[in-house]
Picture 1 (cartoon, one colour):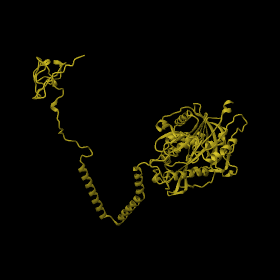
Picture 2 (tube, rainbow, N blue to C red):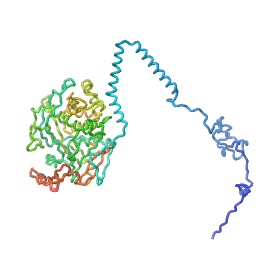
Picture 3 (tube, one colour):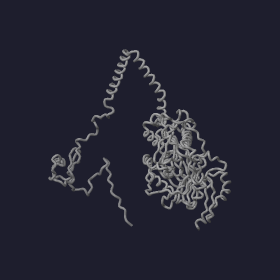
Picture 4 (cartoon, helix red, strand yellow):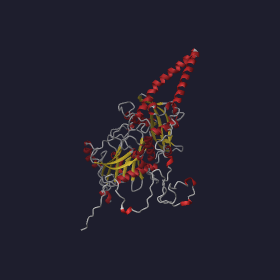
Length: 575
């Protein structure tokens, strides 16, 4: 075994260093130095060829040239100081601070003296004018100062957490998260043309007298009492007949919500049912998808704290929906109607035909690639006679003003006649999502014109009485460019969402906009979600009525509830 030789340890009773010089260091040259002496470099590679005269003597040792261990530090330590004795410079905003305050104080005192001197020499008429000016100033501060202060407090207040459009259950699984930044970069640059599959309903002629309405000759908004059907996808009997014409089915309201989702702020949700290769986009029974939002994208949106207030988001939405439905029927001549070959498919047995609203349902198919053929139920609101006598279909919508002082909008009565472009620009900013949906819906339907009515309250505190102050028309494609609505991006968003759903298994899913984040999520939900007992009882009767009316061998059974759809395509695929 190897032997261990312990080292020899020297014990120095007088200090901490060694008692004598080690053997390996004996007879080696040694040059003593003090801390005040300058040291030269260990290795001088430049030698005498160093040309800079400023540092000529910097690397020369204090012991003369040619000495071993000649080295000094490169930095000039003569300029080094441990304590900064230089004077601190004040920032620009602190310089002459006291002089500025004194100058402002002197200016105020001088102004007060001048005002006092003026009051001494003012005549009686001038004093009355000054008194009236001060009174008007106090009135303005009383009327508008509080509203401005409320707006400041609302902006500085912490943002309220919104509730989702539907309560997310614990057993729901998140399958996909799509943020707005990702969706805004999508693009589908292909020519997408709509193909008409079925047209039904009747349209009334537009009254051109409303094109001449202005703020001086306004019209009172009337209650038309016209029946307007808002039927979801799976309750549409025409969709049943067109089930083999495509593999994606939806209404224009649902489809435009997805296409323009990057502009939305308030929460919404859409139910998706996938069976075989068929995808159905639906809405819930108590969904607010057909309700119109007001000032959703404004800088100062409606106050969400007080839900019972006159200008709460819910009450404003109901008011806007009421105005839009009545205005679209008021501007038409219901005596002059153009009827299509097919009647309105949603007329009940005991329903009065004269009470139906003027609407035409146009079912169109769009091929967006990747084996996705979308069948959409679009709508027209009226028609006008063209220059050559042909009929042009139009889409009619209404923009409403509720309180320009609180909403941050433009006063219709003072700006609409002279500065209509400023009014439209403000509405594009405050209602970007709503206007984008209307424009995309008009493009999907193939409308020739898009007419907007400007409706205002009779009084800011009266939400029941309204007046029509003007009407303006646009071509849908040109208005889309004006509001920066890129249809290639809209089709790209729809294609992205449908590609995600297409890869999923058969079942029910939910597409929901996050209530507090710019994000859209896809949830996997149980098959019986959003179903009521009444729908289950009616499903057996509707299955028998869903057989093929044309006598072919394709059998499919439909359980038409508003949220669920079963289809058996076995014989259809075999044929």
